[in-house]
Image 1 (cartoon, one colour):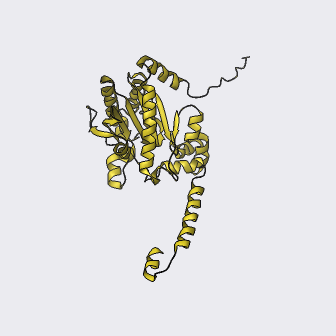
Image 2: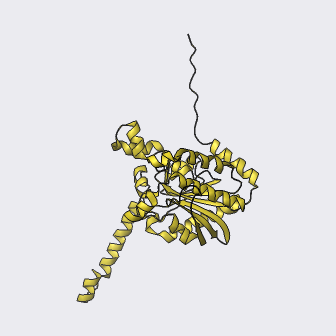
Image 3: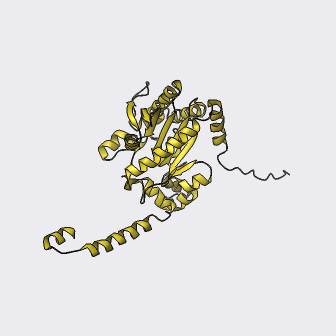
Length: 304
């Protein structure tokens, strides 16, 4: 329209104003409280910023470290030293790809066991130097392939859970997109758990849950409702400590604004965890995870 107006010498400012108004109304309508299944779709949006995008915008002096010192370097997990507002921290996170070539390199953000072993190696390095560990979680889940299972996928995840529970240094995690199953939890046993507004965190994907409970992925919307995987649900359940607001339309609409929100939240929680002694932090960490979940004892019927 602007191009046509330039060529013809007409004034289309009124029409532009009307269109801008309609666009804003549309954006506000899109930004209404999303249904859980819609939130899953936003969390998986291919244009959302990934771990390396946040590292570039939130941190300085990034030095990536590679390898698990046992098998190979898993590109689905990135990690290394960086500075946050001048303080040296260890940053570790899942990394997805933007195109097919990069997704094959990153294995679609699904780590092998060596990825989790690399993460644990870096956490222990941070512990050695008394530095805070920050993890950015964004994965559909750990890779379930035969090779990964042969190399001890379950053991690698279990080892991370145990060791993070007793790591003698502060730990902060942020779920920036998908938080899928044990593949996410292996970076998530932390003193503070932040969740982006449209991120999800669940023991299983909606499709996997539907396939198990209803024998059909067509029931994924019902599964999504039942899983209580949204940031609002997890904040209410006491699993997430803070929900970081996303720009109108989602994180993919404004990478810089989302990074600024993450940086501010990290700085707040970093200052808070630094105010506690390490023994107190570990005790609180354990109590936090032991308190998760709801329990109901079944009635016992007398035998006879």
